[in-house]
Amino acid sequence: MYQELGSRICLYPFFGSFYETFNILGPGDTRCNSVRPCSLVPLRPGGVSAWDVETTIRDTRNNATWQRIRLELAAGQLNQIPECQVCITNEAQGLTSPRTENNRFYSEFLSVNIVDRVNEILANDNQVTDVYSLDYYPSNYCNYSCIMCSGGASSQRLAYEVNLQKLPRKLVLNSVDSDFYDILSTIEIINFTGGETLLQTQVHDLIDYLIAKDLAKNIVITLLTNASSYPTELIQKFPLFKQVIYTISVDGTGAVIEYQRRGARWSTVEETCLRIVNTPGIAAVINYVLTAVNVFSFMDFVDWTYQVNLKNKIYLSPVFRTEQLGVGALDPAQRTTVLSRLRQGQEKYASLANAQQQVDLINRVVAVIDTTPFDPEYQTQFIKYIHDEDQVSDKTLAQVVPEWAAYFNCVP
Image 1 (cartoon, rainbow, N blue to C red):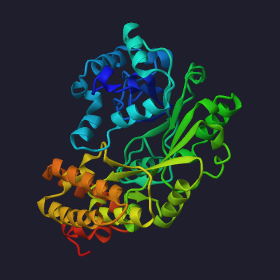
Image 2: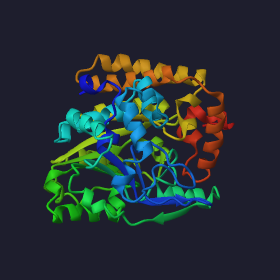
Image 3: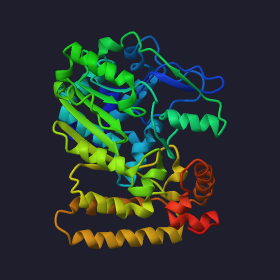
Image 4: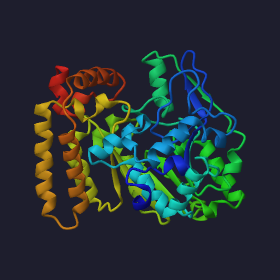
């Protein structure tokens, strides 16, 4: 595929859509449903954006902005596309890239000839007709208030923003657009997202609809979960789909994940995660969001994956849209501490059998730190940000991560 289409291609704007049917509105906002070429492309606050559904989902996918992005990708101009900054940054740091992972995913699961179809779209005046992959984002309903999250992705976080930060926010849930059910006839992949997908009635309703219409057998579904509960109600329905893939968010152990993902209890997360990965018929992957909070205890997470013999693929993701919470907030002294622990981990796991995944994980975090310079402004913003988080957390960051205690003028 890369030989034919170039190494900088991203297939998502050709085959997929990120479809959001709810809004978090501020003063003056008038947004409706949106259809974006990627989940990492942000909405523009207020007014009408290029992603707002025009007449239909299909029409919106052929507007001028979508067409520009497809043409630039086809020309190998990924690094010049402002909407693609997350993948550009991830790839520069050697991290998991949504672009390359999604390309691989499409290559594995789409039945169409990808190269031929892209060329047909370009030859057809860059017009797309069928939707083959849909990220469906019906609600922000979630039972966690993760520190790196926002109200748009968590109802609990929205409550935090409104009640504690006094931000003027309003949640609006919308109906699907007129051609939503029509496009399901060509869909081969549906990625349910949120929010906590298991808690969204829209997810359950659409799964039932696809089964009732005899479409499920042709569709791969993916779901995100924070591992707060097991999908008991859905287990008997999963075999009716072509494939079921779970992405489980686990970015720490013990008190660290409980601080980073407020509302989580490690005992529940661990039990649910291991139960899901051992459920027949479910392909599960783990996603670890790397922050300046959990990086000090990253080796605890690595040790856990080895102890429980976790063979599932683990994605490593930097924080997105809250960059001040990332490793750029670590000053030279803190980096020395972290890198020392990681070097010891490299030596330890290099000598152990069946530990290549652990070695790879450590190497990836080392690469992130090496390629992310210290930004004093990020550290200042991090400390201010955490002061607010500490007001509503069971424990303060200094209690959970002693390496930060001196920066908050307290003893761990």
